[in-house]
Image 1 (tube, rainbow, N blue to C red):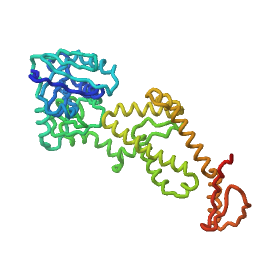
Image 2 (image 1 turned 120 degrees about the vertical axis):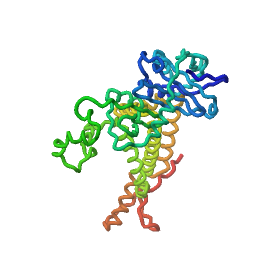
Image 3 (image 1 turned 180 degrees about the vertical axis):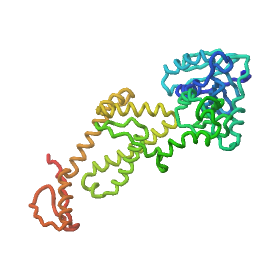
Image 4 (image 1 turned 180 degrees about the horizontal axis):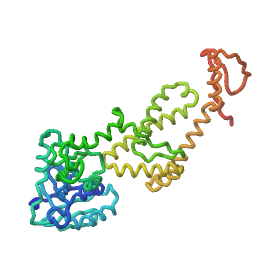
Length: 400
């Protein structure tokens, strides 16, 4: 039976987050032979909006924290029929992820509104949806019994891929549900009945292990899966499409920047290059934080961004990509470029030539190494007897 409310109840959520709730749970709904479970349950309490689905063998719930102004509202719940879920997904796919929509439950219906567009779903009526909170509460309270070794139906494993994240598991008994926990996600899978051949029919780990004892005895006892071969580096030097490698490269860049920043000789030799290196480290740190946050919210979206970025890096036309995106966003890249080039010209007119700075740096290094040399008077470098070091000569202002 649906939980109805007498007061106006509305949930505000962006299209991306609602799509995530559906993606994480819809694969768990039952077929139409179990009408009460053939759908996704939208369930709101004073803090969260939940999507819940079950096929009797698995149970999954994902949640989204309500906006501050909507917290404390009266609880409500409606079951969106399984036949309507594809329509709702297609409607959400037409929107940009950040577009905000509202969900408003009424008697026998749920209305989704985005701007001037409205989508209404007739909800499943007259049947009691299982007390999913109670089911999870009892599972979570179970104590571990002995040395649990449940058998799980692997045909159901693909349903957990929709969670889009790594899940932690809790196993308490052979014939009790295995719990899964993730970021704003909880699920459970019932074990299969013991039967069949081989380890599946054996109820203990010891019995199953004994069947493999002779085979495993030929292996070493001190190896683990971390020792397995790693992927070979891309011989073409292409950008990685692996999120972990991308994160590693970004953090390595930050650490390298922090180390190089302390090399004062570099600052004197080429301050522009030094500053660019600092900026690249700052950009790498910002990129890592953004990628990490996106990966926690939506690993699939993070992977898509890494893939697209890798393609753009391999293409090499980053300046063109940035120019076009700036135009699309309403910025003025012509103005940016003009200001940058004018500032660079001004800096170059006020500083010694870069090669003269490097020459002075080299002469000082040779002097410190005890190498004798003689430099003719010239307008580029000169010896400063006060500081006892060679210095580049600043250009003279242009005469008019």
